[in-house]
Length: 84
Image (cartoon, rainbow, N blue to C red; front, side):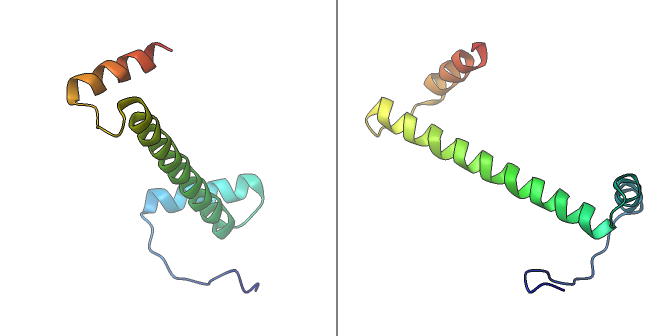
């Protein structure tokens, strides 16, 4: 076992375990590999969301000179972005 791998015991709901087992069988890999990939995807999604939030905060600070948008201005900006 590689030093970057940790052996842990986890509890999964029956449906989640069935899904993971089915995915492992389909991809001819292990349940551990399926769960590792699911965790990696969740971690990557969280990193993208954090980067998006940081970029939005930086843009907002640049546009407003450091003053946060009020609720009405924020809603208008979100509507404009949704149109794009």
